[in-house]
Image 1 (cartoon, rainbow, N blue to C red):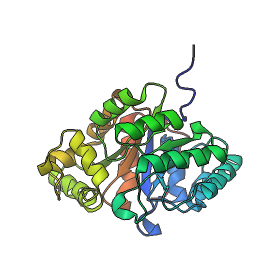
Image 2 (cartoon, rainbow, N blue to C red):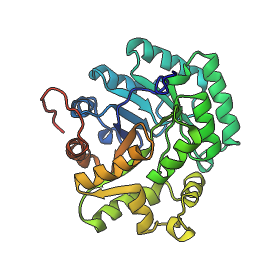
Image 3 (spheres, rainbow, N blue to C red):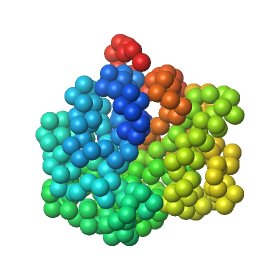
Length: 298
């Protein structure tokens, strides 16, 4: 019998998503990555189109022992396949099995040369084939059915962003059981609903409600024009940003697992000072297998 999990990267059930969008002082540091590994998280996802040499990825892998690092995502419009493939091979040689290449087509609003994303992704994945990047060591940012099917066919699977467990159910149905599925979900550790929604709305409105691919996907999930118009309804914010106690947030994240996800990338909102305390509380609520006892200053 064929092992359907053979093509799936071993990232554990939960990882951490971080963006290289703000100043470096707000990025997760290598020292914090050591603590993230100790807490039992399996991967660190690096968003906001990191540079082609992936020096930040190097710094995390060098300081940790088993933590995987994935790009979430490398933008195919700004980074050519050849240098990315060269970097993949360098990282794979130095840290075997610990780097996962996530690619995606970004947003038409951000790219002058944007063309039909499906065709561009097919071309880029073909180039990665040519340069020897294994299918099972790459994933594709995917929301709609066409790209989800492409991700299942031409990579290990998909990394959907700004989605709900309902999208995870649909993605699993579209992709089949053998594909890897790793959605991202945002969290705010606060039992003050007004505070949590304000923090969540600040991110969702500022970065995503002006982008057609996210807005169209949210509408496919049943959100109305009123929900997705800026600044976003409470219903929408509550759906894409989990808040409450650590146990309540853990329950929401586990809904993705129950819906068919293999792994969930957790993005902590509210500023750099919230990241490690939130991840520490969530690790206990999620029942993560923690490593030897030591602490890192946050």
